Image (cartoon, rainbow over the protein chains, first blue to last red):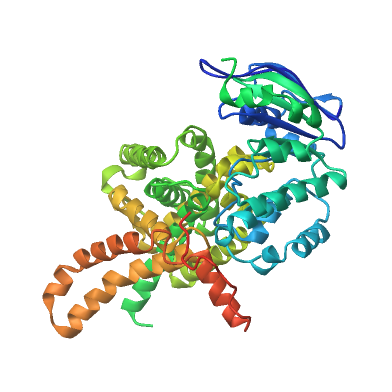
Length: 235
Length: 303
């Protein structure tokens, strides 16, 4: 397993956001984590990235235990999170945003930036403008491109489709599939269940911080209990 | 150059150095109202190192860099408690620091206490102007480096900067410390130019003005503090000149009311400062003869 989470507990004071959660990602997989608001999806990603300290449990990357590592060290080791709401650096130029993605790199990354500009001519055209002038869809492309420049082994995406039009959501998921075909392992947190399960290989459904369902994408799509998790069935 | 112009240019140079000292932390999102504290430290430590009576008697070309080193060390140490605060609480913490420095110095007899302290070596415009230019060039260069980029990413979003491997705490300490060293350089030059210092000169009003130069000039590019300091040093003087030319005494009497009104107007009309990135970008594109880049959202967006 490339990424493994064992018995992870995240607490904010009295709020028990993630409850002894187990999760694993094999190399080359797209795994999605589904669930309603407050199910603990973002807390899970933050704990895996090392932004939030877990109360218990462990995180392993490529066979190494990284539970005590700082977030910057995890980035250097190939774990990158694209945060919810895109979170680009608005007063920095498009180009500088990309440079920030390559922050931990010491090798040459200019060819990769050139490839990104080739793929997204809109970004190339505005490379020297503040990123705040980009549209929502372009900002999402920038956020993902920026994360790619960190050369991740595992990319974690926190609700990337949030606030995008249906057409842009389709483009986004096409891009996620492309990246996966190129060898990137992806952990995808989504509220757009249908799109996520069409793209992912496997999925976990969280409810109040615990896994209530897991299986292959096809199994989950066929399972009636999936809807229940969103309506808060068992709680 | 007339004596009047020269004295105004000196004031401008000192204000520009102070402004860049506060700009570096501001560019990484820190509101530092402690300029007077670092100015006091810089002025007094260089004066003491330079003093032939009761001091070390070093020439000012040694005493000024040593004073900067000392202030950088003090800033480094106090940055740890101060950087635990943010926003308006950081403004208060840095203000409190400046008050502590002032209270310290006024009670130290070997620094002259409340009577002030004479300074031996004199720094004329041939020293002050090149140093100020050097500070401007250094700041422009610095903001283009990787560390400058780091500062700006922290200004925009600390938590996302962490996600890309930025050690936010060290970068903030660096911004605070380097800024303090520059501010103290201005303070040391102030002492050596006027050859007399007293703590009362370096009061909270000075800190406020310097922070205003920076915020109203704009923190997005290294042009901000230069334009801000120049603009706000020149305006009260220009109003005074207008009053002299027209013989209307009331303009001179009430010029600080105008000055205040301009500041309020600035904050309403251009909260992101006089100089923004978009503006610099547009101007530089035009110079190169490129077509201006297309912007769907025409207005500048405040950070």
